[in-house]
Length: 115
Image 1 (spheres, helix red, strand yellow):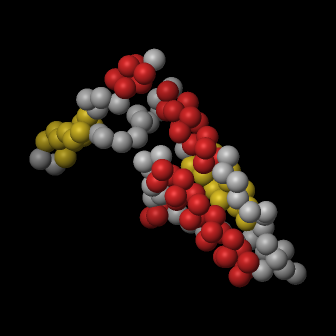
Image 2 (tube, one colour):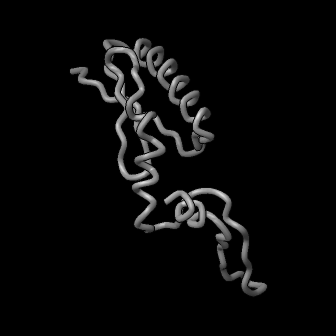
């Protein structure tokens, strides 16, 4: 099984067209878009991230190939405080797996029930 998975990541090349003709480059990370094995490998790799023990009011939610860190608190200051600690734990855990966050894709959304 390990040999099959290993070979899945070997000799991957992206071929694309440019104005100057066809080009190609080696792919050294990720899984092919739409692959059957991709979601399974994501689940295996992110299991420990999704199981991280975070403080009360903070949850990690996985969807497709992304995660969301969700926090509930009484004030925006509390949310910022607990999320900064949660993000640090998530980043450390990802780093331990040889992964990192794509900060340029990171977004924050604040929902409030102020009337």
